[in-house]
Length: 264
Image 1 (cartoon, helix red, strand yellow):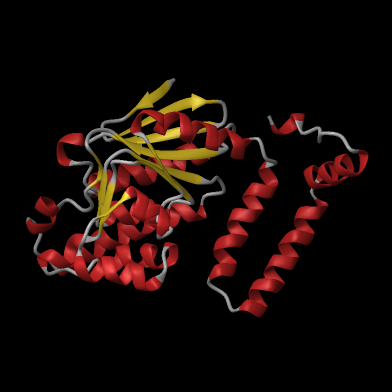
Image 2: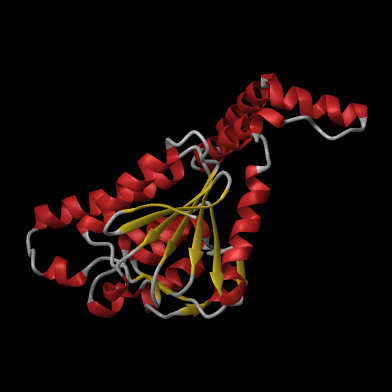
């Protein structure tokens, strides 16, 4: 199952078409240090370029999915230029997740706080153990979680996101489902199987449609409705010209299963 290992991010291939990137710094609760962010950035780039990569899973080892930025590192660099560079790198990684052609699924086994919660919010889908908890707790230490708020406010109802940002309170996995931060909450013993089954379901769909659909989804959501419909219509027209869509519709008319063997 394991394909390659780096110091900070382990790359695994648990099933055909599925590649998992595992944060591997459990002793620091998988804090998003500069090195961790760079390692994750590199791993995402390398993995998404693999010819057989259809879905990417982000997971972590230890009790925490990620506790957010490395506070010890941050406090040792009391310099605005350093902070600007750090948050720019973090934003680059977060945006990269949405810009990749493959869907990215968060596999959350433990707590996800601050930028760790942001990481969950920026993934296309997220499934968590029912024991997982989430918070953007910077406000408790005098720092409003501004960059995590970008992801949260686009995943959750704005008032629920603002409540988390203003109080720093934790929510549990069931609340995270209710508020739209994650898709599903399952017993931790079922987490990996649930993730793999979800990814296999996605990877069975035609790759061009998934790729075009993901790109369209994030572009249109930031637009006005008229521009969004115009772009969506153009995307659907392009999608209809793809041979997988042509085969899919012909199969529907012929009352048979589509033949997408080239997509396997």
